[in-house]
Image (tube, rainbow, N blue to C red; front, side, top):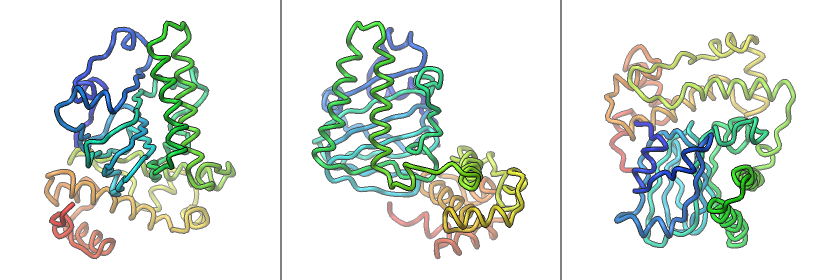
Length: 304
């Protein structure tokens, strides 16, 4: 799995970074899908890569989004939030692609400029699925924000990048209100904090990008020691907050990554097993079959 930089992204869409944007601290730009289609000979299929930038898309048209191990079919309009933490694959299914998207780096929304920490926002939390199919009314509301972005980017207003940050945050908050209430309005008690730290430690190990990269935290005891809590206490907190035990959450995430590696890389089973922390191929095969009812080879041979 490769990592796509902001420079490589511009190469993919056959565009150049303007000198003004290049001078800014942190990168930001906004694009129209319709205008982009004119400059590209083929539909802009985004390969299944990890990216070093954030991307928010408002798109109308038939598309397939492969996000982590999930496949989402989009029939009309969708609002999509992509983060550097989770690779995704975007496949346009027809020629009628309209809407806007913006790309930005974490420096653009640095805390001293925006007042937020991007990865602390619910929309960018690990384990979520930030792809929202939206109504025509919602599409128009979000479209107006993107149109203001597009207009402001070409203005000569001295503080336009501060204003653009506000527009980006407005769309982020719009998306967070589309999430379930339990996600968009988290409580901040000790139990929730420990659960959040556990999820962060777990997700920090992913995606696995090389056969030589190996998971360091694999068991409930590993995480309990790192968090300085008793393993029974951690189990209770996770059970109360997620409905699953520590081992179940870890196993589900390792299984998710195994599916991604089996489908999206050409690594052999031994390399995948090693990278996911298994000492023997047989241990990995037994684990994967217990979780999915399929052997790794049988899962790999299934059509996408």
